[in-house]
Length: 67
Image (cartoon, rainbow, N blue to C red):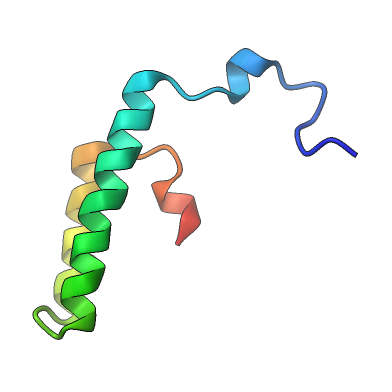
């Protein structure tokens, strides 16, 4: 059973280079923020503000859906 519907063309399912770069930068920055949260450098409220700002800045394609 295919993971992607046959009705969706490859062009629609693909991510552009620009989208990939934005996603990569977003995920890297978010990983730093998560690390800071785990180390108690920032609190949960700070983390949520950072996460929202990163979403505004990078407009990730998948970032909003993964976590």
